[in-house]
Length: 335
Image 1 (cartoon, rainbow, N blue to C red):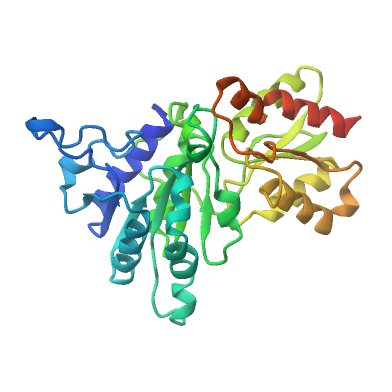
Image 2: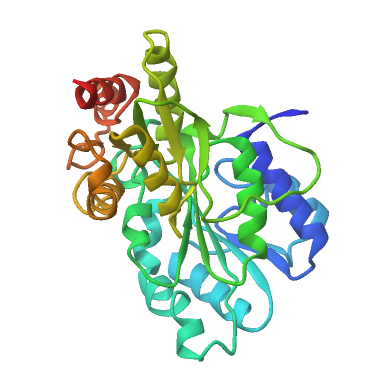
């Protein structure tokens, strides 16, 4: 099977879905690269992270639309197009900028099917580069998915590897509900096996990259990568862990998490988001409520500090919870 980067897997998914359905189009800032100087070369970059590379030359400017710097206009236009029968993909350059378009997202996009009694669908995908670790400072490094998980009517997806990135993006584009698709910037160059042909990964169905008997570890987005490193290290000492990657926070695969906790009796929850009202607290509360009788130790939460993301490289490295933090939490719950 071919080895592809997370970035290339997303790009391939876009190309294949554009070919499959002529109603699919994308709009956002620099998604086609714009006009590069006097030479007029289109597709100079394919977006700030290169994910939309090659689309405009193949499908044209009517389907790969560069927009002004107005996130509210991008989401608002996508909402209207979806109600009119199109299947738009809206790209925000950074997930942090979602605040500029919050009314269009949580007051409109999330509620259209309810407002119109289910007589219409609103199949919008909002792509959102997310996360810290790239020295991009506090306004360009937040996760934001924990905030959007609290909004009813939205599906919130965060793939942790290239295989899931392609399959989940195809599922999101074909979904009749709005999907917020969070792509961690620190994963764009990560590689794994990815089929050439189109395929889907179900939204709301967890993956288990590692299986073990001693501790359940639940991790989201890039934290899955760090959890794998910690778990593989502990395996050398005879400590084995279930690793649950929910792949989406809404819908959440509670059944898989609870079944794993029932088997291991211990839980560590890991996420890069700050701790207050975050995914670690949400998962911990759910298990404490529905699986308390299975627990033999307090639940451990591993998250970033409740501070803005630092710009200084050394501070940012300390801010992001990595393999050492996860290993320590696993050892603590076993103590």
